[in-house]
Image 1 (cartoon, one colour):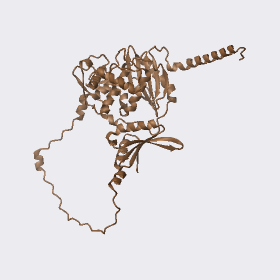
Image 2 (cartoon, one colour):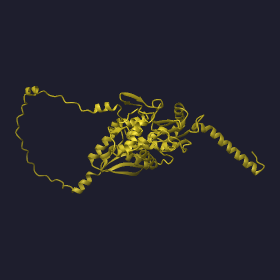
Image 3 (cartoon, one colour):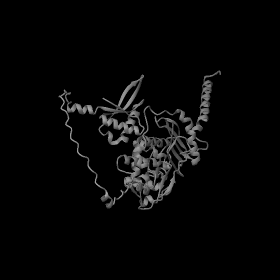
Image 4 (cartoon, helix red, strand yellow):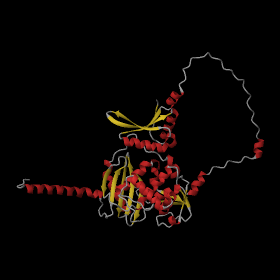
Length: 441
């Protein structure tokens, strides 16, 4: 193409570039925005391993989170559990304010109590608003104070588009968040509390002998779906956060403002298709913790059933007549003691000084992974600390840098352990299917 004037040539180039951009948008935009999307619609797909954003649409525009709020409610509850301030059988009392909350709810009455275990499950499975309010009042004294704590926690996690006014997600004009903030919260929940990850995919709970199913239809129908949370109020549309794991890849998909539950779920599938090939694999040596430390929280059953299963079995009472009939056993005759022969004195090595002996005893290490990124190594050390708890009180967490085949690697290790400690800790982690290598001095 020849240009007779400079202005004409520049105009031609501009129009060519503009048409190329419009053509690209026509091809790729439908992958992010579904046909007939409402103004409420927003979405984001995040690689759960690396934190990289794979695709997004209006992800920083504020929306009503609806029951996605309960992910933060659960996050704060897990903080209380980690701090030792809440046990599975801790009673959660239902106030008049909690009992009057609208559906979805368990239908608890004023003055009734449920266990913290059942309350935690009801937050995710049933999305119970009465339970969310009762839990907030139990932890902070009032739902208003609990909402302030939720907002403070959001700021610590880097959620700057978010503000909470209640624990349930029911409509309030000042209760706002964004798709990006919700994805950041979901990643923090699975990274900071890995032992509770099985909680997000629980499909039902049992309350007063009644089986109550959850709202997430992707559980069981979408390959690799671990679930997480759904939400709906009229002002928000249909929302969902879904964690998907296929092979060694993990993705967090957030869709907000869907027209219906069916179209929202279809959009999750649609967003996954181009995102999975671009997702990173799990870091080398990184293994997810099993739910063994949280087993008591994950048990399914009504409070009465769980309490009954914990009762100790009664010992059979032995009748007095039977004990009298039994003859005393004869004691074996004492054998003559054999005197050991006196051996000539042998030259023994001089004993180690107490300081050196103690240093030698605590010079063992355990390695719990080798990673390409230092942040992944540090995250693994934090997760292992949460799993083993008091077993690592005196140990020192350390990240050691090495070069393997020209590549820099970061080894996650715990030092200052005795041989017995190193072997025992590795045995515990092996039972949890988490890699561990004891290292001698």
